[in-house]
Length: 572
Image 1 (cartoon, rainbow, N blue to C red):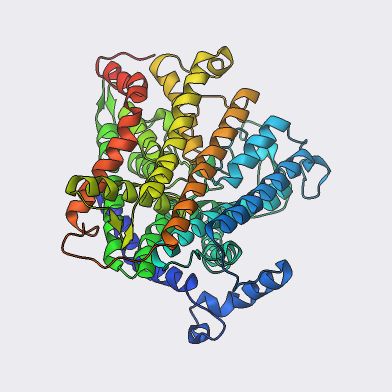
Image 2: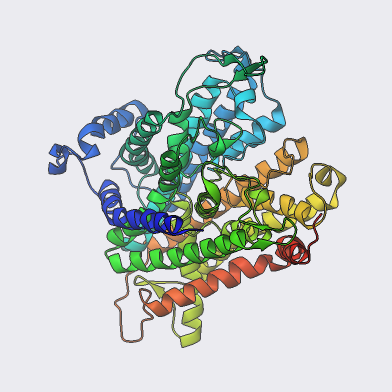
């Protein structure tokens, strides 16, 4: 690693930190103000000026009453029903794609198990792909199914954090907002404008965006080769900004048509983490304590940087097996080791799953950190909305434990944290951990689960563990050596994705509803402050104890054993 690599990391995070309050403040206005008579509509730079008509049109077409409040149960039912129909539509589109237009390659219909897996994947913001996009999905399914769900699944994550914020902010009325309004505003004012700008930038750099058929060319050796093209830039923009992941092409962001230049690589990494970072400021602004938002930001940032440092150290260390340092196997020569590691760290932190290198080729310790990033619950900035409400689950657990230590009823932002909130928080923490450990145990116990492994031993185990961790965390990246396009894995991973998404969302909405009916208790001299350095330390400690140590035995069977074997010059 050279000085230029270090400078790029500093510039990368420096720009993100500078933009955090700007975008965060804008999103706070989007979700807390009435735009009917707002003077900011007249400002040239404000997207509200250009998209407020679209918001009203959506309300009119869909019969949405924007002033109708919802309690948490109504909000949850609306969210679940909406996502169920999204799942159903995407499932059906895949089953009939052969007979749909915009299929110039005449691709066949997709099987039931793979259709189920893909529908579950994109509805849950996971974007796990058991298939090669360019040989499986028609343009119509890519656009009407996958791209649309990239917007809606990301917007769903934002709606949940907005509901939780209102639960913390509101006083005894039980109102946590309107799901349909939050969903519409997430798309119209946040995701769509940013996606338009990013898509245009990507196209300017050479990312393909066309409806033409695949191109057949003659190679230098005289052979014919078919080059896949398609409307990729529009899907890549939202897959990054919505922390969706996946890829129009099988090689994902390592493909030159998805990620052709160092600048697009920078842009795609930047887009991955921009909104999750900004939402911490949005949180602070909406609850009336910007300091509290920065406190959560710092806790996330510390975990992100420490993980990145460990991954970089491991990748640049001498490898006794290959007798070299800075191994390039599995990495893009255009981007090098540092950009590959930075991309891997960010994408596993923010619940995206887009990759520009093969995670299976990472050193054992770097691969372990990527796995741990997901095992923590994707809370290190995390998915759009999902990372922040996941982190607030750990905040609730931290104030509860701190309250027990000082002998006081725990409070957060003036709301008492009682048995109901703690029980729901525990459910939200345990649900993905259940999927990771139990589903992995089932897979390694059955011949059908073992038959898909490329490698044996510790690395083969890590392939399976990583797959179910990625599914439960709604990440979507893979160790790649595992062939997951089998009926067993398509069904098991699909179920894992659904549990990892909705078994967290429902408890979070229940917490929001419970908090929304509570009075705000004034702070006293005995109140445990949650915006200090001490709280950041406690929060990180709880995250590591609950999130990381839960999986230490499983990691010991995979990455840790593989690391020590590598140091002794052995491999599988």
